[in-house]
Amino acid sequence: EVVTDNDHWYTLKLIVFQAKADGYEFDQYYTIDKTTGKLATLPDLFRTDSDYVTKYSDNIKEQMREQMKTANDKSLYFLDSDMPEFDFQQIKADQNYYWNEKGQLVLCFDEGEVAPMYMGTVEFTMPAELTDGMLANP
Image 1 (cartoon, helix red, strand yellow):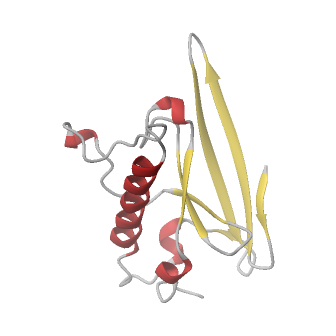
Image 2 (image 1 turned 30 degrees about the horizontal axis):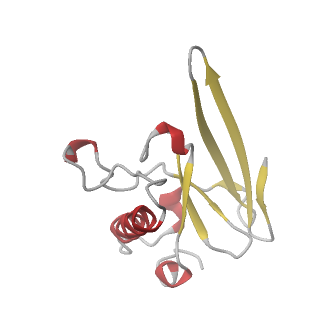
């Protein structure tokens, strides 16, 4: 599935579903910078001094808490639990992402990675003001 195709970015999403007694879905995103023609990983996007990992991870935790508070017990994330070793800590260097139609960065997680399997794959849209000033090549 093509999720982004604009002047700067082209992102292809591969959806993988494995089924045996139960099913499991994970998605792989490939984002190409059209200005260079190269595959762009998340770290490629940011200045080395930006500390994007901490800033985005903290924002994701805020979004998780807000969703759990307002979703009438339908949203549950691995966060602030009795087993902190299993809680979401921070995004990974190879974190899946894409740019949405509004130009916002969306960080993507596989089924069961940050939430119970019943929630499927989950995504978090980063506020534009959080991204401003951190990009290596804005």
